[in-house]
Length: 296
Image (cartoon, rainbow, N blue to C red; front, side, top):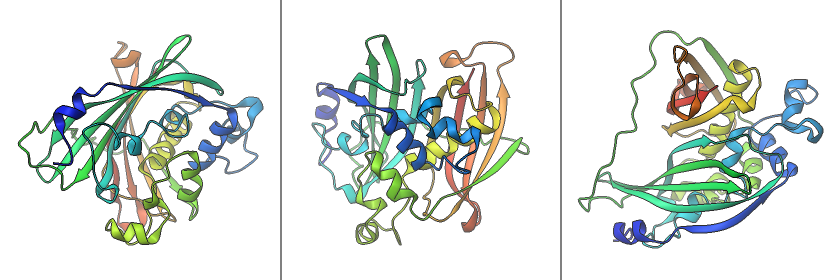
């Protein structure tokens, strides 16, 4: 069996140093569509080094995107075909605001292995801390087609009840034709997002957008629309990747803000935004589901 559950879970965590600069942050922000209009003051906080704020989803690429989904496939007990791999979901907990430049220690391990029958799911957890303490915790759910069926634990359901009622806010964001080519410069070199031949081998008509690019675009839309552009208010952010996005399409982002009735919730949050994301040109085909932004 290409995935040895016991070996993967027993493996020693991998620890490495990561560094990033304001240039890395700016490149990431451009990769998720920031800077339009280029001189808009609200956009300059993402693109101009003299007033740079770091969108928390930058944590998924800090240190050139490693450790990440692809590096998780080289962990002990894991030997799978990259063409069978999809990013199933992502969660992020922010312990304090991310500095525009920094260095930190990233410790990653396979935290869980689930048997979904026709697929396996690897949960890769990465904890990042600098000299002042914890910065963020990432969890990537890695979906490997054709690798399930060994009788292992199916794991918890990631599905949430759908938001009810009309959304409070609906915004649309255009994905540029070159969006994936720009985003991959932040460290995710999976050829699925650039090479038409590889994309066809993986079962897609053409290269698809990185799920984490959609993830970043969505968080930016929530921050800009509901949180006054204040990136430091984000406490946690989780989603399930429900479908693909092709460069050139339009994302429709629906938002349902919910309070916590004056009490402090998980991760120190005072409020929650439920979100769904669909692809407009394909009849509102689901893209992100079970999406929650927790905020102060």
